[in-house]
Image 1 (cartoon, rainbow, N blue to C red):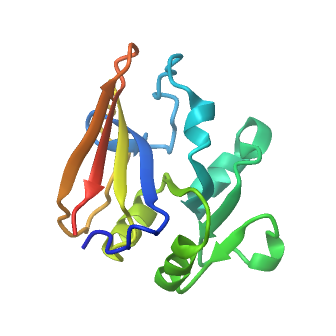
Image 2 (image 1 turned 180 degrees about the horizontal axis):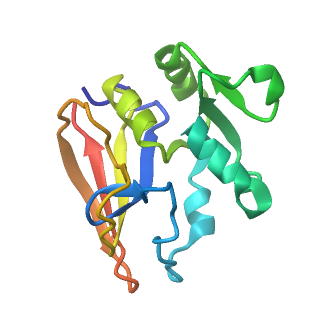
Length: 179
């Protein structure tokens, strides 16, 4: 498992907020438990990426937010129910994810943000299409909800490459996916 991509490839980075007990959303899909971190430079963070990958449910949740998610850049949504002709502002991927991502990686550009969606994360991890796992651990215990990595999933070894604690109590952990 893990990424077998060459060094000239764009990286696919799974970045997500998670509760201390391993959930990326509450039982009803809510994210109101994610505390703001004023010292985090979101502009600099977003500047690292020009392409975003997400599942249909994550994409639909972002569209419902005030501002509809704004112009986040090139967006690929993995869905078997959305039709490309109904959504010209995104690229809908229904089949052939592995081949599409391999082609995307060799295009010129910045890193690729795998944004939310535990099921999509599990699928892309199984394909060897995730290079890093970057989790913002939020100091809350939810007791249930949407897991970071839904079962069933294969075991995957990770190597710690960075960590940072913020005044809010959020701890950012960065791991590379081992081959």
